[in-house]
Image (cartoon, rainbow, N blue to C red):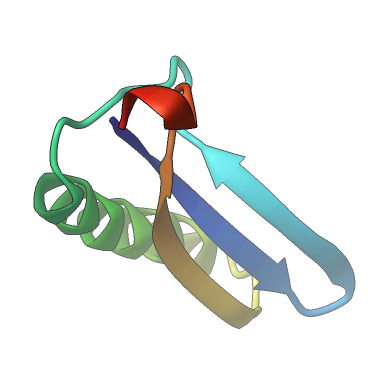
Length: 70
């Protein structure tokens, strides 16, 4: 299973790792990556609409669960 995470760095504010709340798990990496890209664009648009200056933004998918069961 995989979850989406976004690293967001705003000018003048330390970088933050954002996750969906509640966390949504995806069964494939491909599905997770598609959602991660869409969520990143959504976050970017939202912060820019509030006049924040984004220094850096990245999305990624993280494996969740017991590694012995993968």
